[in-house]
Image (cartoon, rainbow, N blue to C red):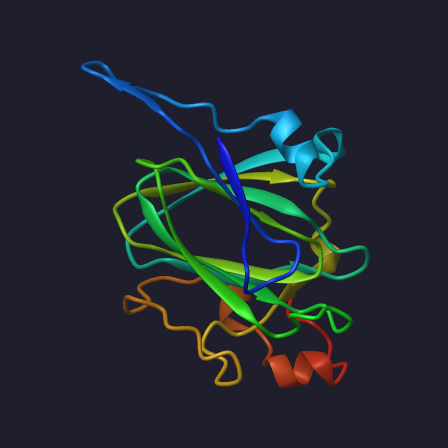
Length: 185
């Protein structure tokens, strides 16, 4: 498994496994505690695994948590997604920078997203499954959602948006969030 620091955002890492491929298909190690430790991620710090399934064109994001934030390791286990991370940590040297990835079930690559970064994705296939490994239990009262089409972020989503949750439709702008506006819930 290869791990690389993503140059656009401090603390974001891309984990790329080396699948064993043969006539049956493939076998891939999707997480390795020692490799996580080698870049300063505590593998024992994860508290919850979750899975979402989305139809093509569905957009989920841009999400983050208030309070202590939430670090997560995300992977597309089936299908393909356009994945986006935005650094929203005011004290970070990469504040407001973003990184984009195409994650797919074919590669099984994972992205580590530190607490304080916004995350979202758009399903490029029908369906697309995203597996999340999260460092603390989910608390809906800490949900923060930034508008996916915020002009200050100008994220280049590849497809027209087909479906969004009501929560994502009520998202605030980045300007409102940074000015202390209440988060969308």
